[in-house]
Amino acid sequence: MTAIRTQPSEMPGQTTESSSKRRRMLRIALTAGLPIAVLLLSFTVGRYSVSLSQMVEIIRSGLPGGQPDPGLDSVSTILFHVRIPRIAAALLVGGALAAAGASYQGLFRNPMVSPDILGASAGAGFGAALSMLLSLGPAGIQAVSFLLGIGAVALTYTIGSLVSRRGGAVLSLVLTGIVISTVFSSFTSIIKLAADPDNKLPAITFWLMGGLSLVGLDDLKILAPLVLIGLIPLLLLRWKLNVLSFGEEEAQSLGVNTGRIRIVTIICSTLLTAASVSVSGMIGWVGLIIPHLSRMVVGPNYKVLLPVSALYGACYLLLVDDIARSALTMEIPLGILTSLIGAPFFVVLLLTGKRGWD
Image (tube, rainbow, N blue to C red):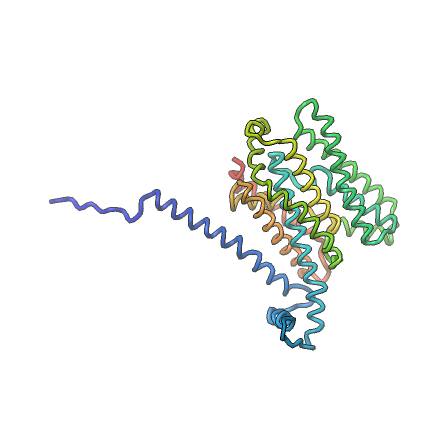
């Protein structure tokens, strides 16, 4: 008898390619749909609940030819003057911290690096504490916090450059950043010790915990341009972070000016970090865990990794802020929640996602 040979419907290579394509499409759909879902949820969550139908009605009444509903005046006030500014601030701060963290991790080729590695957060925190001790207004607190955040990194870079003349530029910057962060944290402790325990000390302590409860439209007018100024150059130069991951000598052999790229990356990441901390206070772990999570989803290519990190960071901080303003009768500081969520989540990422750095 003649043997009958059957041909498989798909070759093994075709099956693998098809499976890879399906996973890629799923990741794209997740990345595209996540911000929409988080935004819709955030508009409705809070101490004063706003339904989606009310939100749609308010938006419709604001369009040409729409008739405003007097019964929704209070809802409209809450939506446009409280909730939307807070949502926008969470998106900007989360995206800025995650983008800064991803850029630093690529620059220093170290997955344990976060946006405060060079002292920006510690310097900004000291600036805010000093401003509160001197009874400056909200604008003064943000300005001094922002300037001292940048000043701390400038001091780190200056000292690190002097030390790196003996070799090891990246290691010198990291070690110097740790020292400068410790010094500014000590200055902040001195400020807290000297502050009035009835008024100024609680205000300083609460600010250092991080939060967006006091953010308004005027804050967004300052925060948004600073975030764009810091983020756009990083997005334009993100492919060079791929080259830097090979090592400084290899990058130079490929024609990349590593010194210039390092300075631009540090300046832009510092701008993002200092601007965020000056508005929201000290919010940790976002710039550390979100780049890891993004790397697990889209891979280590910075052409995709950097924008996805910014997007995931914005969504993550917005979700955490939703929990902060709705979980309890009193608002939970964001810095506490990001630490409680970020620390165990980072352990899980270390156990499951180490291959992303192989």
